Length: 242
Image (cartoon, rainbow, N blue to C red; front, side, top):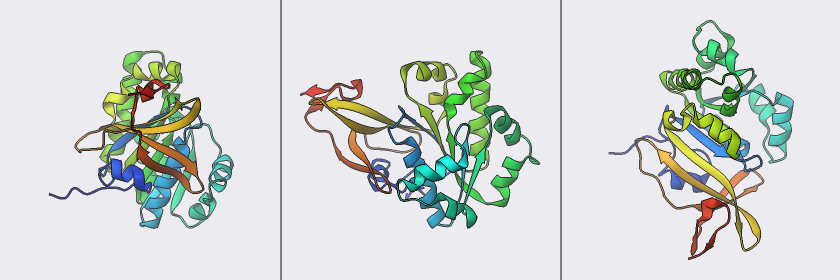
């Protein structure tokens, strides 16, 4: 049976995902600053816009002008997509977002409905760890977020910081368990050179590639290349020959 897919627009990653994400799923994209999480998000939304699927970028810290600048550096014109009504950028806070997702009259909820949003990006899920120190409350926040997006059948990327302190804090809310998938972007040191590695750690309801692949950030965004060969302990950050 052929399973419907939502391609990310990154051809190498889509191969790893066996064609793309499953519709209506919520996927966590983890990575340290500079690994290309936002670039991947841009590609995901732009690919959807080209297919006639409305997109929404929810940001907690970047003003739209900063996103325009970052996208322009990759050769991507986000402002044009906004003017055409194919993409919407919302600057808000975690608490306002949670309230909005439960209120059909809120601006954000109406954006979901009126614009036929099919793809969304949230930058970043890490901010939820800063509004509570209570493990159960944090899990409730994450559950509200993930279930609201699933209910509307919106395929979503949740961006999250990967540095050790932030990830341990986020882990208390079990976001990795609640998400349908996890894509990890990581710096690795090979022969005294810093390279980038990408791996799909989880994709609920679907097969996916298990290998760890090279990737680079070029004009247009991420380019996923061949798998690492003849190395072990790659995700430790400092690999060695097998």
